[in-house]
Every structure is written in C-alpha cells, then in structure tokens.
Image (cartoon, rainbow, N blue to C red; front, side, top):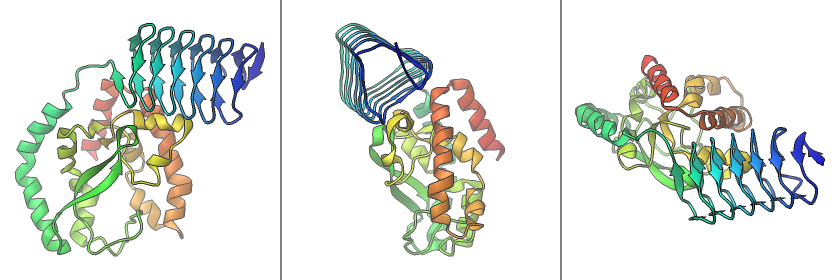
Length: 302
C-alpha cells in the first residue's frame, strides 16, 4: 500500500499531482485520478475506475469496478454506482441514489433522490399573492432610476449554465464593477432601501417558477466567479442556486463590509468569495429539507 494525503491506496494507480484525495478515501487497484479531480470524505472506489478532470466524488460515495466518471461530473451523499457504469460530462448524482451495473448517465443529467420538490407550487402561490407589491416596486424603481424597474442580468446556474436573473432595479446609470458597496453612488436612496430589506429579490420568484432557482441554495454569481470554479468547488454547481442561502445570510452586511475596504473588488475576490465557496460547499454536502426551512426562517427574521 502507498499513502496519498493519508488515504488508503493500492499500488498501480495513476494520480495527477493536482488531484485532491481525502484521508479516509479508499481507492482500488488500477484507478486513474486526473487533474483537479477531488475525492473526498468516506468514499470507496473499486478497481480500474477512471475519475476524469475536475470531477468531484465525495461524502459516502461507493463506486464499483470499471466505473468511468467524466469531466466535471459530481457525485455526493450516499451514492452507489454499479460496475461498468459511465457518468457523463457535467452530470450530477446526489443524495442516496443507487445506479445499477453497466448504465450510462448522460452529459449534464441530474439524478437526485429527495423529498418531492414543491418549490414551483409554493412560488406560484407567493407570486400571485405578492404580484401587486412587485408591480408597485417595479413602478417605484422606474421612477427612482429613470429606467424600467424590472432588471435582468446573466448569472451562472445549475451545471454552470447561464440564465437571466430578475430583480427590482436599484441603480441609476451603467456600472462597470460587479461589486456594490453601501456607499455606491449608482444606488438610488430608494434602491438602497430595497436592497437593505431584500425587496429587490422578490422577482426571483419568476426564476423559481421557471425551474432556474430554488428558495434556498448558493446565490448565483456573475460570469468570472461561479464559472471559474474548479475541482471539488464545482459541487456548488450541482444544485440550483437559491434566493437565499447560508453564505448570503453570513454576509448579509456585505455591502457595509465592502464600503470599509480600500479596494472593494480585490477584497471581494480574495476574502469574501473564497469564504462563500467554503460555506456553499458545506451546504451542498449537508443539504436537507430541515436545514432549508431553517435558512428560510433566518431570512424572514432578517
């Protein structure tokens, strides 16, 4: 036996130096782990398995012999994959799914075993209930910003695919930076109130209705951040982004924090963003209906 970061590993393996392997991982003979792949907690991998570039395998996953995990695929949460199965590029298999022998999971597929998702039904009810308020907010934002009050922007969503997120417009004019501070001159006084109270996020009920977002999850970011995730960090993209989530709650005063920095963009990239990535990875690994209810409750309490 040989050791890679304390892991139990047999001889005749091919492991790229940039791959990450947890201490308690068990890898069988002839397994190949390619660049920037990540094998994390409590994984058991059989013989002659191929873990391709950027793939993530973690949290009680069991792979039988001759399994092929394609680039940027993600498996987590009690998943068991049978002998000879191939998991396609960018596919996600999470939360107690069991896959038989010699199966093929298509590229970009999402396989998840969880409680029924009633998010769309709830979003429809809330949207109908709150539509008059949303309409008033759009009209007020139109008056305040001198532009149409419903704002859309490209964000990175499930599996790294871009989508248009909807928000109440809070800024006047065109801003080059993706970072907003509490003293940003582009934000109108009314817009500052909308952002502080999170009223500007209400139109994202439309995104939930379209199946692009959920109520709770990692907040979707702009291109240049989320689409640059690599290795085990890409597990964040294996779930739908949320209107609220643990990272956004931990950094609810982010704009005030950025306003105190000499270079807000640099601080966001080097300090805030990496912390959010770690928080969101932990959320995906331990995601549950009960925890989502807790995050929703914390959001409502402000």
